[in-house]
Length: 117
Length: 113
Image (cartoon, rainbow over all chains, first blue to last red; front, side, top):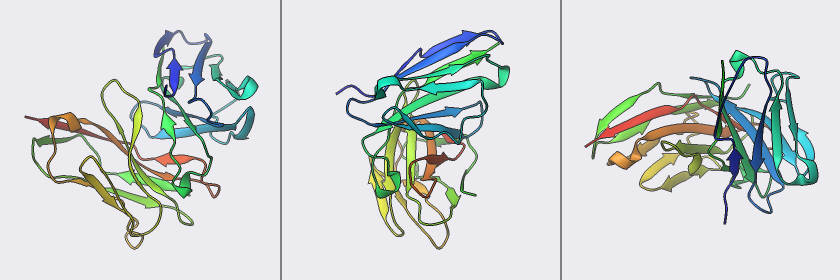
């Protein structure tokens, strides 16, 4: 069974440009999450989809970030315009059930490394 | 608010040494606790978890016990291998719905032969 896949694995863009990151969750997983780790800091929650709906987007840093999950399958995270402080690793994850504190497992992708210069 | 504090790294050990990576947390309610590992060039993988106080999670020789009285979830392994070199992240389930994770900053472990 394929895991969570992310594309691109690495991206280098100039400040002010746009980047779109894509995530394909594990088949059948309704719950999809985006996290990011900026250099030297914690991995931080960005948002959570249940199917195509945004369940929780409390971690989205500002309106330069737009996440979509049309059709409830893959998701995209667009950064427009990118700033230097957006550099980091963007992780996508998926789970069959939403309740993590009941012991359900969330599976992470390898991450998309974004460098803004 | 909820938070996780991990010991600062990097941690450098010789093969077969004993490993402890400290993790303490602050949380309301009763979160689940997790250790994730990221090997070089790979994504985050769940290493072990514990969902209630006094539970012990274990996997691949690693163990961690959920200690509510000390709000800790320290990771231990009796004898590390070179292949254990990775970044280790302690995490807890963040919100009341239990649908998001809060991570520590990560601890880099380097094991030499």
